[in-house]
Image 1 (tube, rainbow, N blue to C red):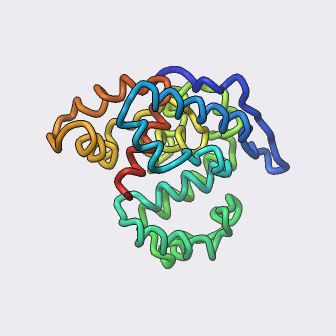
Image 2 (cartoon, one colour):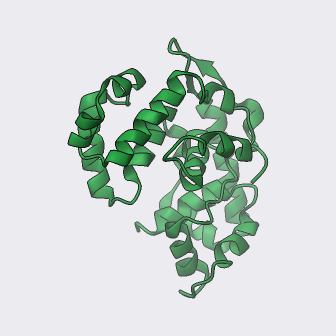
Length: 228
């Protein structure tokens, strides 16, 4: 995972009054995803079936809210979806939705813990806010970096590991060819769809070779298959 997505040349970098990028070109991303769906349907009969069943991949429609997205990922770590959702609502009541960097920095760790965060996660979210606030993490600058370079920038921040960085690439920067090989959901879906339930660490990366250069979009369909 060393290159940028195929639509990178048409990315739009817009910067708002707070110095943070406001978004990516949804039209260009959407067109690229439609191309990805056609490619996957042509090269993989299982993908063709999933695309027909679940419709278009909606990643292009996600708003670009990088701080909020990363902070939410930190909250979600090692929690059930329901528990994480409850805590996100409580944190949002303190710091706004989407989460506001200045409000996070002005909220005490004790108050964040009162919203349900562990001491470690409260520290991680405040560290993330500090990194963005003082420019150590510049979301506008990393838009143009390749995938590996983005990951290197993100994992410097306490509380952000490779999986969280890969989810940021896929859902925030909308990179088309990200494969999070360590994701338990993707591994389970690959076994269900391609492996006759056999456990093998090599299965996911092996079948994913057929999805290049659109492994992100294929991943979305694998995740979606688990909810069917």
